[in-house]
Length: 295
Length: 278
Image (tube, rainbow over all chains, first blue to last red; front, top):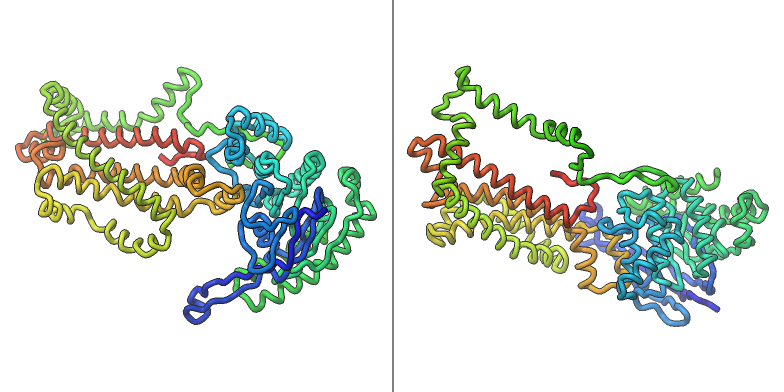
């Protein structure tokens, strides 16, 4: 059964000229998404892989209900998305923890609208903190936690809402490489335990192959789904230490790399024509991509 | 910021910073913190013996203390403190009552209006309040109203500007996160914007407390028949130097005390911050 369905989703942004480059009152329209069609089934771990700045995050925002598509629609269990809802929970790259609340208080935040009983809230929040491996850190403030721990709190906060769908926007991009691997394993374990449908966004090929049941490669801006690739690995196999040297892993990884390479090059070409900020984005993509390849 | 990896538990920081474990530790800390003041007072006390200062114009600390006790017992000092504090507090709290809601509205809901009026507000806020005091006297008379009004005037700007910028600079990631959970506008304000803006708001409040005392003394020296500013100026005019210095020291103490109280309140509200700038 299809859980999330994207039908011809497009998104354009109108940005006002800053007065320095173009003539005054110059409105430029950027098309971020150029018709995304995608079907994700219940319980699937789906990864969208693409160069930075290709519109992956825009797509996730639309699924989350934080942003409306210019045309097309997202359906969840067949019903069109009209706004944010507790059937979906988002984990952001920047953690987005409330610095004035403890780890426990942060996990409680989302529950406050659902669960009126304070004791019950604390019980649920404590449970989810221990699920993400943070029991004993309830009373720590975000500034007392490392990046990886902060993201664990954010994951606990999302899970505590009992959403059907977990939306993750490059959640591990800001943590160091070793921590990232541990977090990826834990996320896999948690999603097996909680049986969530996951939509996960990344620009790292390794992350995509390691986590995904299916990977959708997105084109350079305007973003479209170039191809959806099935990863022929069971979840149990992934938690095995040697998965990264297994034949299936290496082959899938290489195939995704060839798909992505064209888009990274294309996103650079596109950059020649646009503003400086987008260009630096493009460079970062290339660097990241090359890194992934070298690993 | 702690830099431990995911596995290691970071050491908790004692953000209060003034805890001391043992008695010896405590007294050492006390000497460390107050030593400079004692040395300063000692040099001041001894300076006349070496002919460095004229004790008629700058009396030594013990003389000032004596005079202070005398003026306290006679009631004169306390009366003036009460009058001055009354003016400061009324002006200050009216400023808070006006500038805080206004700042939240401008920074949170009427952003484009805020952009439009911001330059005007900046100009008004920059106008030297001492130059405006004669205008206030002309409009409101020489009584309490003009003094309280000018204190209100100087106090509102830092509160207003810092509240607006506090609300406007809330981390967009947090707002997005809260939106993704579908929380309402009022909850967004109460649970996200308000606490996030708190540190900036308190900076404004403490700045305005400093301005309040500046303006108070100025106003009392320009046109008043009571209060500490009046007492200082009168004592100078009648060459009662110790009394003048009692006024100066009292004003300084009141300022420190006021700031200290605000700091304690601030710690209650934004103790989650990594460190407080004092």
